[in-house]
Length: 163
Image (cartoon, rainbow, N blue to C red):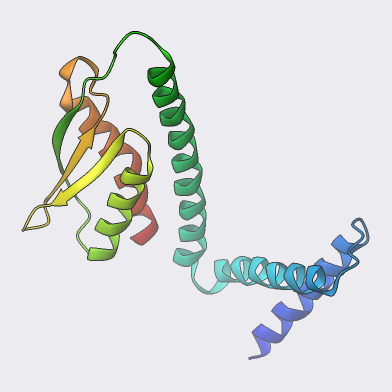
């Protein structure tokens, strides 16, 4: 309890120091900033008490940044396809072998793939070892390249967040 007290005190000090530079007129802004400051300080304190959770937050931010990058790249790829006269789509179904095992990890992986334009998670195999993905772009029919991109991209980062 004593550590939590100091976390609140440090978060309040950080919030007040920040407010010296920003003019917040509404009480809601103060409360939100205090809450975010408290979360930040608790995250920093987690380095002392539980380093695994400290780094999991960093890995989660890395996953979100990677997803954002992939979202923009795929969006521009789909927009280019829609606006061009030449047909470049080489679609197909791919069975991606999965290293993720829990239902939560599989759900997050499948959701990230489905949220990326041009790909869609269709089904998970009965034994949870394969994820069937419909991909809009399989360059030169090379399904192994798409599998490698998924495994080294989304799946590796999802595993880092949870393990």
